[in-house]
View 1 (spheres, rainbow, N blue to C red):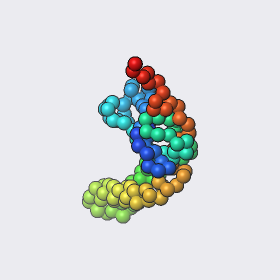
View 2 (cartoon, rainbow, N blue to C red):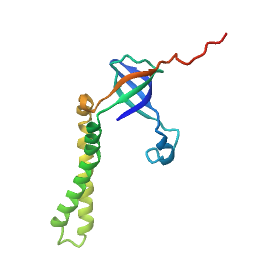
View 3 (tube, rainbow, N blue to C red):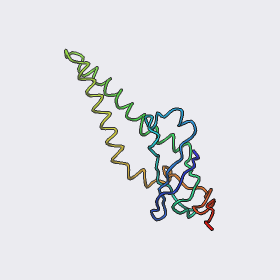
View 4 (cartoon, one colour):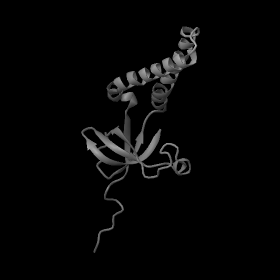
Length: 148
């Protein structure tokens, strides 16, 4: 995944980067629910010593992006279905079996999200899930015409 963005903050060896939206985002708007004003920010390792205002190329390995998406979306979905299935067998003799199995599924899904959130610091420390600034495309001062 290669994206272009602007450095908006520096945090030691890392920088906060505001990603520029793809042209396809203007047509879809699903990620921002149609709000063009919201920006996507991420923290990226800054080995190229970019500064605030620099336009940079940010990269993250595709397998890391897919792995993170699996952890964030598929594992809670599996927990939901596991809860629904377990609830079906546990509460099949109850008159409210559908409600109880649905609640069990929701509880397991929320627990999965909670466990993922508790391990958030572990993921943040991992180089696998950290974006990296690959190169500076334009410095803060390029393209500015001085007043005479």
